[in-house]
Amino acid sequence: EYRMNTWYFSPLPKELLSEKGFVETLYVCEFSFAMFARKSELLRYQARPFHRARRHPPGNEIYRNKNLSMFEVDGFEERIYCQNLCYIAKLFLDHKTLYFDVDPFLFYVLCEVDERGYHPVGYYSKEKYSDVGYNLACILTFPSHQRKGYGRFLIAFSYELSKKEEKVGSPEKPMSDLG
Image (tube, rainbow, N blue to C red; front, side, top):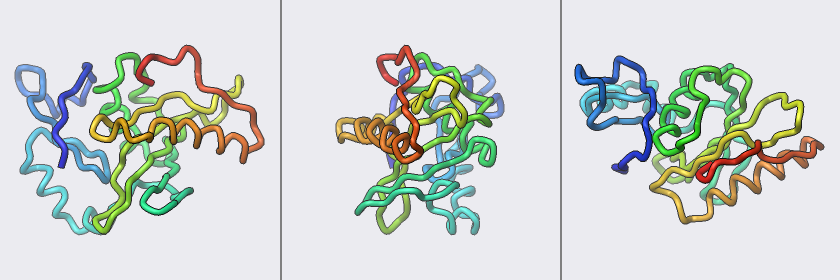
């Protein structure tokens, strides 16, 4: 549905790269973050019965208000989904370093909801166990959904979740300019 120019390099899996070592266009399933080098592969993947049945992120829906929904996704339980989310985030965040070791993190995926499903608009991650009380490790609103207040919403949500958990939290420091 969206075509976006990327801002930074991301070390995508080798199977996606051409012989020249890059991908001209990366096709991404918005519901699973599965990545493909060709549109035909994405369409074939989306035609599978499992895919048609699951039109939301994995994990637990922990918030819903009108057309917004938040899912909590455990990096250990949904390793591939979270790694793919990190690969995609790296295309838009210069200082993102997390790609493979997603196990110690929880990912909070914000979605717009309509009759077709739950469409991710952004996310933030946090360590499951932070010795220093960080409540936010990385945050990204996808470029096609920026300037809608979602970044502010994600930050506020991280603080509200900390309050509910009866923890004092703050974002990791230093925070980069884009999250």
